[in-house]
Image (cartoon, rainbow over all chains, first blue to last red; front, side):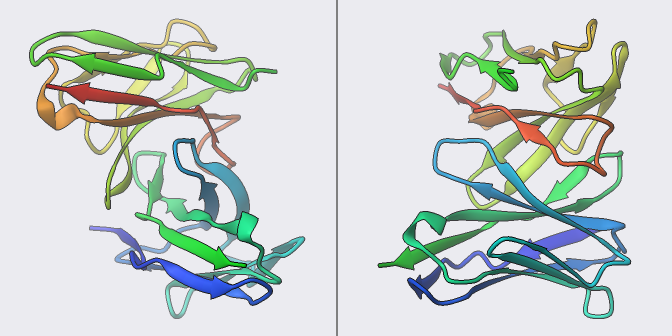
Length: 111
Length: 113
């Protein structure tokens, strides 16, 4: 069955560094991947979408890549700030005309 | 625009009770969906709707019912609550479906004792 996986271990980095989060998928080829941010006690908030024919997408300090050979998407936050601390969710097109979500990676940016 | 709203924010039920989680959106989105989020498991799709009068099952539909009589509202009914349904429930909407960003509500935290 199709699976989308994110590193369940929290990522701790220093302020100002680049955070890189990984999303891997298996047993299918999604037409696109989406990234969301979720703060404690709140619903996810959409950040970026990248389609299979796009290698890279940027939005301000955010960058997403999509490697269909490695079956992987990388999500980068440059010049990270403590306010970037949150859980980041990867989601892809899946069956049943709905998104399939990964379990998320918690990012902690230390001042 | 209020976006996607959910009520209640918190709810405690006893096993066997029924209740309805409310979801409404004011963005005229055709697509609406319900997810549950459990620790370490990510968001799992319960039911979704591609328009008024059209609903379909997601990954974990058992124990839940939905209906979509209007574009704005998409209530989720728990027929006979079980402890396994303790979770945080999120409603989401989007203009046309999975190819576009999903707008999520603030969630309902449900505890079944």
